Image 1 (cartoon, helix red, strand yellow):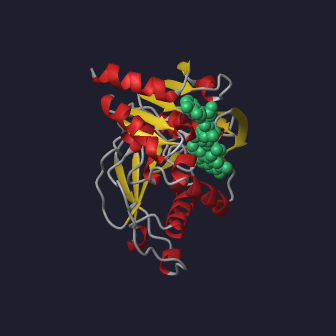
Image 2: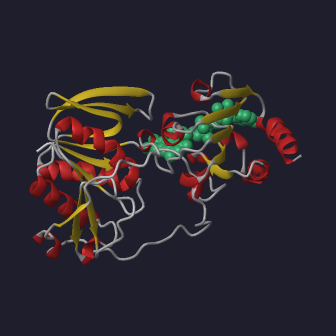
Image 3: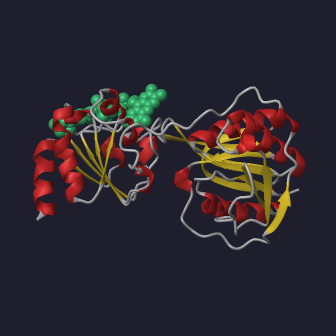
Length: 314
Ligand SMILES: Cc1cc2nc3c(=O)[nH]c(=O)nc-3n(C[C@H](O)[C@H](O)[C@H](O)COP(=O)(O)OP(=O)(O)OC[C@H]3O[C@@H](n4cnc5c(N)ncnc54)[C@H](O)[C@@H]3O)c2cc1C
């Protein structure tokens, strides 16, 4: 009892999640267990912060097949009886967390920006309505929490005991009703990785049309930044989907996030509020983006973008 079980995603923020788990396990008087569910023995990269690396291997776990990973995580919860189960609040992590909480009959709290344990309860602060409100909750342990990427910091966790243990694959994996068929990469610009970008220039509907995208593209190039967009820009076909930031797009944490004609809707803010420095250009002084921007200009983006490109481009 008192353990914190961390589900690790192959491309997830595992080290940071383990770093967050350590003080929680200490508070509960238990250990940090990292669950690695995959098709075979994998690398131990990023798992040094675990006291126990619990491995469950089965061919159906090679990719994110929800039914298979739900069975594996639920089996791990039942086998190890942790006080707390932590997942990253990614698309897959949120999906898995909610389903496993139901299967294991545990309460679930999503979008956690903070978690602490006290008196047999988890105290959580979750960003809701795109981070516009914070919901504080006290939840009886054991519980499942999905942690927002903005709460995960780049600290390496203290080294754990590093024990390796095997979990027998649950029987359900032999009787799955779904099958992973293939992974389809986004058709265009598969190389765009907004989550790793240090600087981002983001265009909103204020850009007016596909013919004006080069204005933002030029500024992005001058700043050595990636180009991102709000959803209407994507839905209008002005840029491919890989550029979308927000609730249904990428969640980003760059050092600089410069917006051009973005209003700051909650669904957009949800994906970029972790940026270190937010700069907004918008003609509307009442635009919500100014509520979270560190610097802002009430101005026409075409004037500002061109001038900035010239200044930065030298
Ligand atoms: C379930 C769900 C999921 C969603 N997911 C996402 C998501 O992932 N990402 C996302 O972005 N949205 C998402 N949305 C949509 C979201 O609600 C907003 O509609 C969207 O973010 C608005 O985009 P925008 O700011 O570009 O456009 P608008 O809200 O139309 O704002 C355009 C802004 O440009 C300004 N402007 C106009 N002309 C100029 C100019 N010349 N110079 C400077 N400023 C100018 C205007 O003042 C205005 O503030 C989602 C919505 C739902 C319901």
